[in-house]
Length: 186
Figure 1 (cartoon, rainbow, N blue to C red):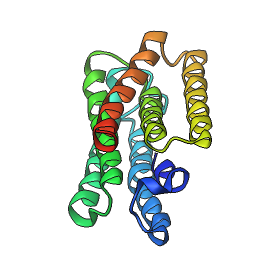
Figure 2: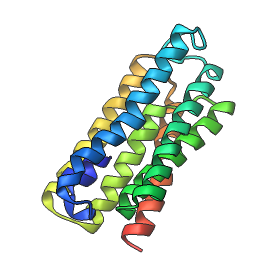
Figure 3: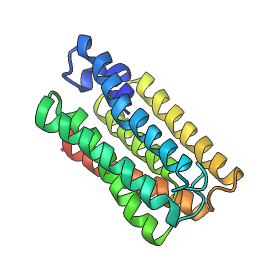
């Protein structure tokens, strides 16, 4: 999502071009590498049985841990850097989706992959409405197609049932669409 903001629709943010790569690396470190190391630690300490997290209850601790890392990252960007409202909103919405996903996981296993894809589709849909152009339309179609492929793969691998895939996508799309719409178009 941040790559979309920085490089696909650069006019959407006020982040200086020279700072984009550094910010992207910081976000990748805090929201991918650190949680990945935490997941590896949980696997090797037998806190989780596998990286597939097939059991609904087993997903709570990893999702909670990742939500904490995202919360810390969003907080850092909000309180310390505060360089771009749309970037901070994106980090905040991803964090909010992770917290919602973790809470839903207490009762029902839904697709985290599709939650992320729903958020990405929502971002690109709203950006397409604000910065309409033929390339944005094709980018939106590409993201929708990728989302469909991800959902299909989750079904093919028997990782989820159709309702879990649809619910994940719906959760990510609804939360992000309304947030981005209110910031960019309202």
